[in-house]
Length: 393
Image 1: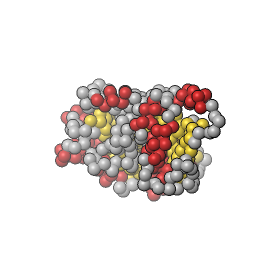
Image 2: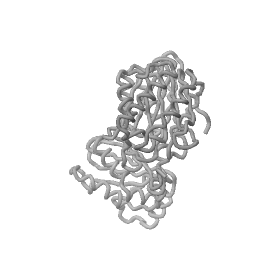
Image 3: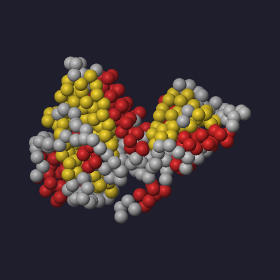
Image 4: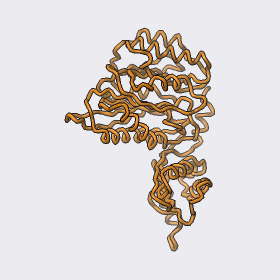
């Protein structure tokens, strides 16, 4: 993958410190100045200390660095695990010459195992105070676990001074993905100057329509972390333009994560329209994208729209959904209600060809009002079972 430079004011350090194997497993994103920061984290009751500590560290709206340990989540390790996370922030802050309270900690991987702190200590003692790396792809590679490739997305936004600011996002996560805030790990950097309150507002809205609209397997991680840091090195921008660029980056990362879902062979996009409100649309869309029967039908290129109708019907608390008003489509072709006099055999053959492609769109119009939502997922294959059956071994 072609290298992608980080925005102004940021540098990176990536390495293997022997967390699990010989692959890259350690990353530091460092800023040369104080950055505005916003973050969202898992609401899991088993949230790890990387999450609880980072919640505290982003609360004041300022940060200088992110340190990521992959292939070890450091979850469910009690006080010892918390102490390890605190020490990791302290060691990183000392190496970079910044306050440990300005260091965000993120972890991903196996639950119930402590960090190999001796290896981490040795490595951080030798890390340069000003990292020289500048490639987002290398960072995205270092944070992977079962991902098959790094995920990076970029966008540009005009500054008020006539220049250009960059937005660069990196993410990982292809299993245990049903966000209950953000999802997986995602780090977005920008050299745009954005006031902290505007950054928080924009990120919250963007996350809802991107990471929180992603699902691979309905399981919410104990370590979900998504943060955005703004260095301001490129100058101030119009808030609305920045929000659009941020949305573009996070949506593209969401699509990449869904496409690379564990064992996945295709991206599944479900759009619900005509709902009472956006909340109802999202609820119905998630019911469709999370249905094992829908996901396996998509995997087998089987145009079985009855499974989509089933998934809509499971939303039994939404009593204003009337089957007589619902329309279902595959790739823009209406399949329900069936058009009288249509050549059903020819239609099914065309739909099988469409469903065999790498991206499948399912549309559901509830016929109630104007609420809409789009969610992203993937098909379900036997590869998912194999990957997770052998995860810790």
